[in-house]
Image (cartoon, rainbow, N blue to C red; front, side, top):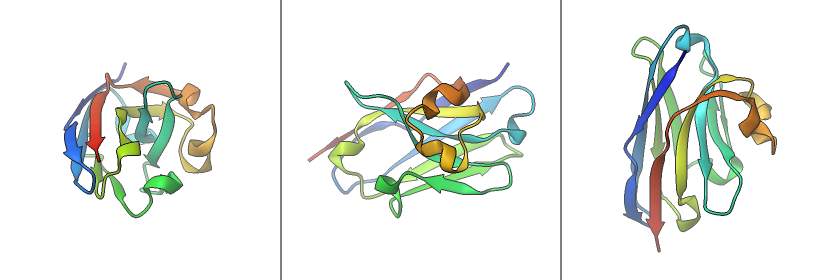
Amino acid sequence: QVQLVESGGGSVQAGGSLRLDCAASGDNTDAYCMGWFRQAPGKQREGVAAIERDGAITYRDSVKGRFTISRDNARRTLSLQMNNLKPNDTATYYCAAGGTFCGDLLFRASARFFVTFYGQGTQVTVSS
């Protein structure tokens, strides 16, 4: 069993920055595809960024150039640095691990169903 605990959400004005962190516990987490999903009110959960064990990274187009995902396999941590935040980035952000959602699979509308483990989520609110 894997547990994921997110931290670092909050409220910022447009153009501001936030950093999300995720601490993973359990077996073999360093071997998993890991990433971040988000869900805004009334919308489906969508993949934001994913990183494979070897460091290969995929970003949703709307966050490219603004968000940076990273992982530390030794420490079992995953991070998401979010810069130049926009109001439509407002959502609950979930750390995700395991399953098949890395690479181009992240962009599938059904990607959220192919994640094995989710954290409890952390709220990000961006005001204009």
